[in-house]
Amino acid sequence: MNQPHPDFSLAPMMGRHLLQPTADALAVEVPVITFDENNATVLEVFGRHRELVSLPVLENEHPIGLISRNIFMSQMSKPYHRELYEKKSCIAFMDKDPLIVEADTPIETLGALAVASGDKTLADGFLIVDGGKFAGLGSGLELMRMLVDLQAEKNRQVMQSIDYASVIQRAMLSASRAAMAQAIGDACLVWEPRDVVGGDFYHLECFPDGWFAAVADCTGHGVPGAFLTLIASSAIKQALEQHGPRDPALVMGEVNRGMKQVLGQHAAATQLSESDDGMDACFFWFDAVSQRLTCANAKMPLFTLQPGEDAVQTLDGERTGLGYVDTPDDMQWSNREVQLSDGAIVMIATDGIIDQIGGPKNIAFGKQRLRKALLEQRDFPMADAGKKIMEQQRIYQGQQRRRDDLTFFGFRVGGSFINTQSSSRTA
Image (tube, rainbow, N blue to C red):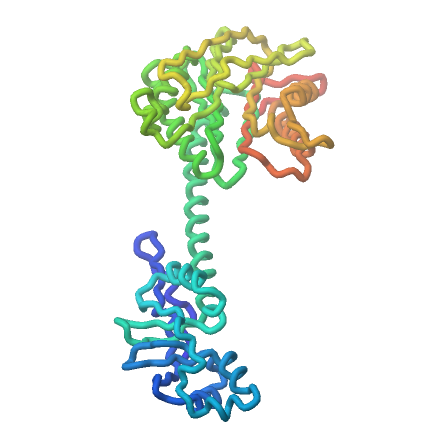
């Protein structure tokens, strides 16, 4: 009995699309019998072809049924059945309702039909026709193998696409990393998507008298979150070009309107929108001359630790996110100003850190632990402090599943790190 070609034409490509194989890739040439032949002939055929699982029954080249070897042999081995049925028509033990499919049936459609037809298709196979005429017998097991291979190929293509999307997302963020290295002497930046790509992002841009930064957490994670980061990042760049960096609340309002417009979540289209997505964010402007920080917060806190103080201050801001259907088109966030001294530390973290479950009680890491960790690491360079804080958070997480994307940004005012042992400058 001929076997189907081993690759099943699984991976021909048209552009970057998978060309799905059809049922004819599974069609195997097998012996057949006509409906007017008797069971003695069936016995003879099964005897000559030990590998034959099922025997198609034809009428004028059209299949009308399928005889299962197991069922047929079981019946004929019963006492007196051979004597009673040997001379009778082969349709006596024939399955009159086997699965019959056209040769051009897509494999995934065939898989659904096979499941609907029941276990007999997996055990006995199915009939493949071309224009109604018998073209070959299909194996349920080979069908399952092809479906697995097809799904594996689809998964491979999806993962290749996501991996490349990660390259694009990291390239988008690289300009901000370069700006951070240029503008800040002592800083740390951790960006860890939960999946290959993520919904957290940051934006940092240098200006002659200071620098602007944004840390944001878009709805979701993975591919949906990554799509939103592209929309939000583009909106930030446009808002900075139009309004400049020195009024973060104004920039935030403009980004809100831009995101709602792109997502169809503005007032004129909310009844039609299928999306209710947005982001939590912290935007701020740092004046390099006065060392004054101006920030606007949308459900994302900013932490400051001044030299000589033993408490971390938290700026929470408004409890309204950007872009969501319920966020007004003309929502106005407010600016808050903090005068920073040389050596002051500023820290921002997305809720991937704060809301991560862990510890002996399986509760969130929380703002209090984050503030305490910052106090404990205040005497280290920011790059080292960031690593130690992240390590503390990972230990706290333990065996718990990572819940969300994670971003942590911190810097020390003045650009240099000094302690009693030595001085160093980190970027």
